[in-house]
Amino acid sequence: MTHQHQGIFYGVGIGPGDPELLTLKAVRVLQQCHAIYVPTSRVSRQTYVADVVDSYAGADCEIVPVTFSLADSGTRRQQHWHATAREIATRLHAGQDVAFVTLGDALLYSTYVYLLRALHEVFAQARVETVPGISAVSATAALCHCPLGEGEQPLTILPAAHDMEKLRALILGGSGVAIMKIGHRLTQVLELLAQCHVLERSVFVARVGLPEQRIETDLNRLRGAPADTGNLAVILVPPRCDEGDQVVTTAKKQL
Ligand SMILES: C[S@@+](CC[C@H](N)C(=O)[O-])C[C@H]1O[C@@H](n2cnc3c(N)ncnc32)[C@H](O)[C@@H]1O
Image 1 (cartoon, helix red, strand yellow):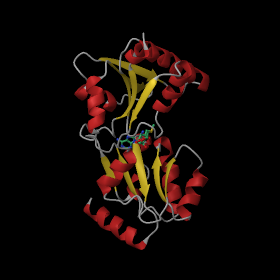
Image 2: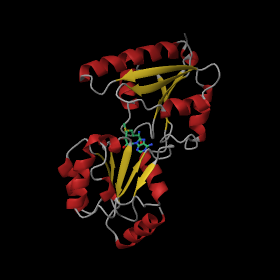
Image 3: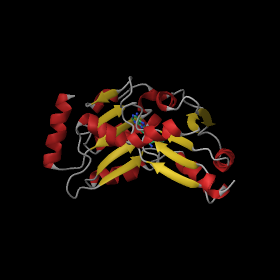
Image 4: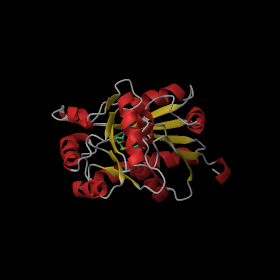
C-alpha cells in the first residue's frame, strides 16, 4: 500500500454525552470513518459514548468496542493498548479512516492518550488528527454560569484520585479548581471543602448533559450520599474574587 492510500487515525472528543455538544468536525469525522473504536469500561455500564456514536456513524461504519479494565495491571493495560493499536495500524495500511472516541475532550484524562502513544510505537508514520471536544469542565461551568477564570486568576483541573493535600493548597492559595474523577472519594473531597470553607461557593454536577444530570448547589446535601454519587461528576470551586463570588452566588440562586 502506498503512502497516499494510508488512512487517517482520528482521536475524537465527543463532548460530555449530550448529542448536541459535538463539534461540526467531530460529526463529519464520525460520518466518514470506516471504523469507530468505542471505549467501554468493564467496571461501568455507561453507554453514553456508544449512544452518541450510534447517532452519527455512517451506515456502513464498523463499530468496534474496546473493553478495558482500570483494575488491570499497568503491563496488561499496555499490552491491551498495543494490541488495539496494531489492529488500527492494519486498517490504516488498508486505507481505512479510523476514529477512537472519548467523552469530553480527547486529550484531557482520556484513554486516547494511551492509544495514541501505542500507535506511534507500532506505526511511527501513522497519519493522526485529534479533534478536540467540549470537556465536562466547560459543560459544567456553562450549565452553572460559573466563571472558570477571569483576568489573571489561575484555574487548576485536578483529578481527586490524587493527593488531597494538593487540593487543599490550591484552594487555600485562591486558585479556582475543577475537581474531576471524584468517584468514591466524594466524602473525603466534601470534608476537605468544608475545612477550607468553600463548600457554599462550590457547585457539583454529575452526568452533565445526560438525562440523569444532577446539579447540587448546596454541597452539604451530598453528605452521606450513596457511594456511587461521585461517579461521572465534576465539582467546581470558583477562584476567590469578590466579583466572581457574586456571579456564582447569583447563578446558584437561579439553579
Ligand atoms: C477519564 S476522565 C475524562 C475527561 C474527559 N476527557 C473530559 O474532557 O471531560 C472522566 C472524568 O471526566 C468527568 N466527566 C466526563 N463526562 C462527564 C459528564 N457527562 N458529567 C460530569 N463529569 C463528567 C468526570 O470527572 C469523570 O470522572
